[in-house]
Length: 111
Image (cartoon, rainbow, N blue to C red):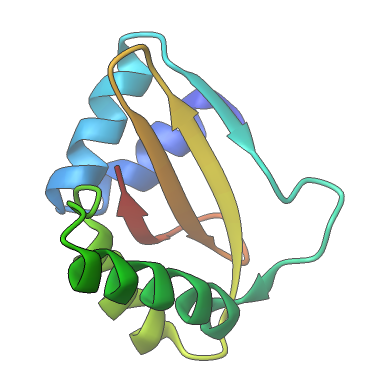
């Protein structure tokens, strides 16, 4: 996946986190598709991990990262759909992006 492909996918998602991630990419942030060479994983698997983290943050008073609650809901809605994981890292912010198996759709974005 090249930068412009990821920008295009994020442009289709109107969430605040996806818009911010796209702006970071345009500004030159680093990005990586973390599942290159590996099979996609079930959205349910990511939901299990991130919903637990979100609940723990709420219980301990920690501030969840922007978009986490929305991402957890979207991952739950995706069910057993296969997703790939990507990250965008800028000096100011880090984003986690869940992409459809065919890399044409953003399932969820947080950061």
